[in-house]
Length: 237
Image 1 (cartoon, rainbow, N blue to C red):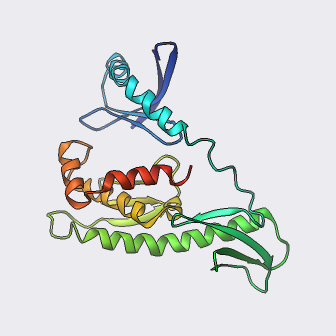
Image 2 (image 1 turned 90 degrees about the vertical axis):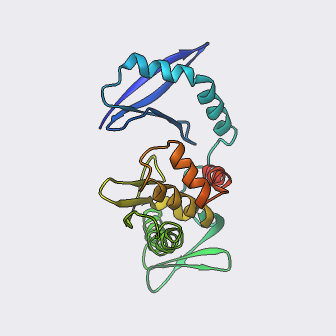
Image 3 (image 1 turned 135 degrees about the horizontal axis):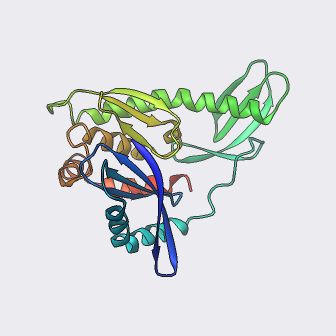
């Protein structure tokens, strides 16, 4: 897999995109909530053909960028101070930071209570909250995975392994060797959005690209997936 960058002119504007050559049969164009444009093309595809495809989809790309743009500015950078809000399963909770006998985080009556032994610093608060999120993600994602797998267990596909880690550009992925990876940040979005990502990746067990067969299966196992997808895209803006 190789990564490069490209740009086309569309009217008086230009569209800059990230181009990824991969072992796949079709070319895919995706626009992400942060306005990043990713083009995935089969290895060997001529750059001129890629540019033509991007140009043909330019109106759609611009529409997607404008759609996501209406929700900016995004949530400002977190400073991990008292009173600041943080998300968990789609709901906002304020931080209460106070001295404690041990370092721990507890969710009590709509507040993140962060207890710190010794000096209270932004880095220590962030570390504790990140660890709490990771622990919750491990439990909640496992529950979601088992719940969503029920729709696939009778299919002629092998149940994948589950892995959780930070991902910059994707909510989830499914490797060829049967490992589903979920982005730790999903713990901040509503449960139904987590289920959507898990179900989306499970559909890739049989359909390795986003062709008609993939969407037919997704429609069958999760008829309201489009609403969940939109809710996910807006969850963290």
